[in-house]
Length: 253
Ligand code: PGA
Image (cartoon, rainbow, N blue to C red):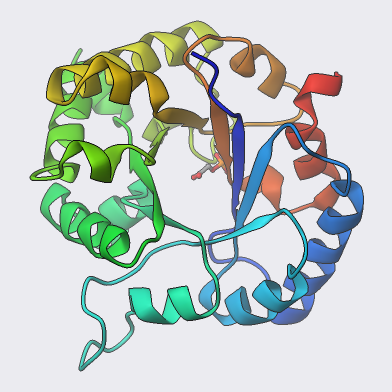
């Protein structure tokens, strides 16, 4: 099945509003004629609204790095799906390993956030990935199965249909150590099979699975050549228009 490639930039806690706008302008001009790849960027919260305005009329989609499951109320420091919807955010990254590692995110809270995003018609980039220790202990597939089951708990076919899964081995994030295309492909295939067992072949074949973890203009092509790798979630290399555009334009290499 042909799945439409999807490259997303996760800016994490980087870029002031001024810097964000400069980067977006750079991306708009270098990706102007880009049609064969879907692109999204996830700026920090303070930059979301100005970036949304700058993106009007562009094909680059806006993504949020997180959201809370309530619509409003006394939840200091959180952001609601309604607020994200209002500024035309299309995607939301949920369950990133940094959220799991530093901010107490669990499979159960990931599941609640996913449900809230879907309720408000936000598309989900659902992140999963094993740590180095888990990989070395041979637990990669068990951990990923648990994360998939937990994150998708109680969700029905039509809810997961448009979901994007991002496989990000924790040991490859920000470390310069990318999983080899073979390692990533093996895991992507196993994630697809897991989704097939939970839902159906039709669903699992349609879902896009991104790879994340030290993606660069140099390694993107080899990754994208693999059958089950449908895109990338890019951190460090998404912070410069020049490198991110080269990643998006992997087909031209
Ligand atoms: P990295 O981050 O590309 O800097 O490794 C990827 C991510 O965490 O999404």
